Image (cartoon, rainbow, N blue to C red; front, side, top):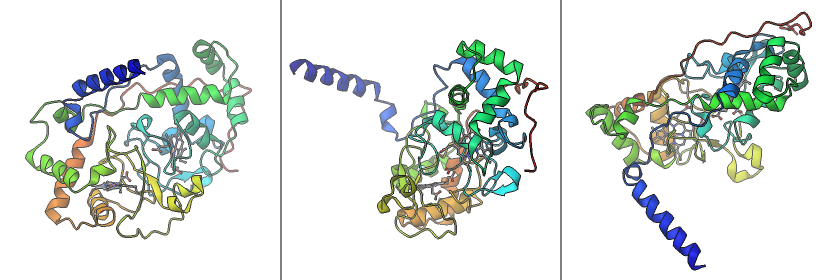
Amino acid sequence: MTRKVLISAVTLCLAAVAGVSAASEPVDPISPAKEINLAQAELGKKLYFDPRLSKSGFISCNSCHNLSMGGTDNLKTSIGHNWQQGPINAPTVLNSSLNVAQFWDGRAADLKEQAGGPIANPGEMAFSHTLAVDVLESIPGYVIEFKQVFGTGEIDIDKVTVAIAEFEKTLVTPNSRFDLWLLGDADAISANEKAGYRLFKESGCVACHNGSALGGTSFQKMGVVRPYETTNPAEGLAGVTGKDADRFKFKVPTLRNVTLTYPYFHDGEAQTLTAAVDIMGRLQLGREFSEDETAKVVAFLKTLTGDQPTFALPTLPPSSDQTLRPTPFE
Ligand code: HEC
Ligand code: HEC
């Protein structure tokens, strides 16, 4: 008992010392990716770009989470197999490893669980896990690489999703101008941008958009003070928990790289950051920002663009004579 108390007192002390600078702001800088299994991530990168995981042989993860466009498709809702209209806006994959859970309604616990979803989703890649694995096993280059990475050339969906999730862990975006400022470079952001950050904090945006991703830490109701009008049928967290109180609660999206991830909200209805900030002020906080205030908050949000992923495009191993041929028009 005494020992336990002592240990927690020491831990508290250490936390207090370590937290002196970090604790003074509700937002932490993004850290570069740590503890990455490089071999798994390299394989995962190939799978992320490989459209042969889809029925059409045309749609890859990168089709909807384009790493040249902030990890999104910049569409209101995504286009799936056979040009199907997607039900909801595609969130960015950048910094998604920092989310408490995945999807707008949190129905996948982590990136590994999430990565299996789109492959078999009839409205997205429209394949099945068995067929995707069959395709990979028919490609000699993959069999060799799975063997190198996992010690066996026997491929299964578990290894596929482990590798993709490991690659996604590398998709963090450190060194935004705002982070340089947080880390002590007083001139990294302008006086106008600092004023925007102050408004962001003081008007209450940080209550929901906090942590290093400025979001992804909780589920919150869309339309706290005034209801949000939309024709999109998404229910949010209630679809997962079945609780009426969770209706219209969505995972708070990250505001990192938000300049690149338009359009905004789960229904993709807000085209511009100015519109999104104005709606957030009125619906979430009951606050009418002046044009000047909105412009300041937007200026602050534009400082949140960090280093985008850069790497050589992976060369995918070619199909063999045995590889199941894609069926794009079925
Ligand atoms: C046809 C477009 C499409 C394809 C292909 C696609 N996604 Fe998505 N992705 C979406 C949409 C739309 C959502 C949001 C769905 C929801 O929340 O209900 C999403 C959600 C996600 C999320 C959750 C992000 C968050 O903040 O909650 C991750 C991670 C992700 N996708 C990764 C992938 C990976 C990995 C692949 C390839 C295996 C992939 N996606 C393929 C459209 C797509
Ligand atoms: C009560 C919690 C809460 C508060 C307070 C809040 N937000 Fe949000 N914010 C959310 C949620 C939830 C969403 C997603 C809503 C949706 O998609 O329907 C969101 C979405 C956004 C988006 C769109 C991001 C995207 O990628 O779609 C922006 C920009 C944004 N908020 C900025 C702000 C600003 C600026 C403030 C302060 C004026 C603020 N928010 C206050 C919870 C909150």
